[in-house]
Image (cartoon, rainbow, N blue to C red; front, side, top):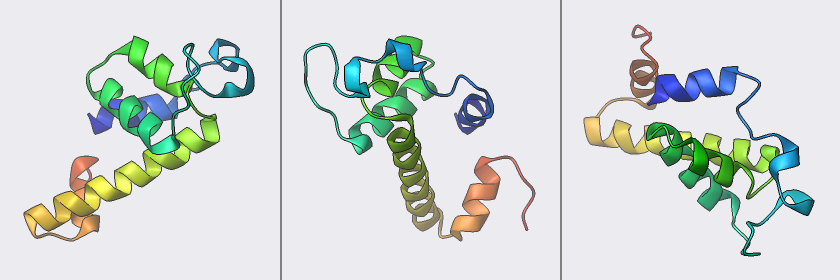
Length: 103
């Protein structure tokens, strides 16, 4: 999952092109407003499931900057939760998830 996220964010296509968003870059076609954390959770889950339709949809709910912040916040919370669950440091967990050697 994290390898896929790394590839997505390393590419220029991490966020759907602005032309695919409704005017103003917010909301979906039904007019419902989504907060950045809802967008980030949907976006990351869709990436993990390789669901391009949901990736594109979630990327259109908020600005690219807001989505980036939300994904970063989600990553931090996930690492903290895993670190507590494994009784390891967040640095150890983060490096392990990224396939890096222990520091």
